[in-house]
Image (cartoon, rainbow, N blue to C red; front, side, top):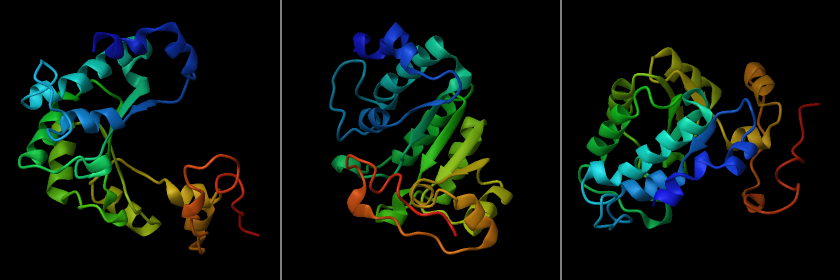
Length: 205
């Protein structure tokens, strides 16, 4: 575990990081925090403090290597990705984790996969995590322009992240501003090699 956690301190890691963008941490935090996938019996398992230790150790190592201002974390509280099961106390654990992340990362990004069929992240959980963290808070998951503006205006988030619509619409901002129709995502091309489905979507005429 020490070797994994210490990887952000290694020169190749620093060389691979561009000077400006923020580096997000995502998938391993999900797997370590869930008791269904983390069955360790050492200090990296057990209660929420043990299961979250890997997350917080990686955050500490990464920010020590490249700075707090360049590290964010992406969390998917109710995602069943790779069969990591939901469990009693899940919401409380994520609120606890958000509090531990206060001041340690540049942002916390919450992903709600309900638009893809996953259980929704309740608004009450998002609000509790936002309050517990106290810093830049990003929401994502099936947003259109109207809902994005409404949630930011309502104080639910500081920013809204958009993924697939931006992939399929390189001029998404313009389309949203004009209320224009969007290109549909070609799901058959996702996670495949080559330019098709990544660089060949048409812009507005």
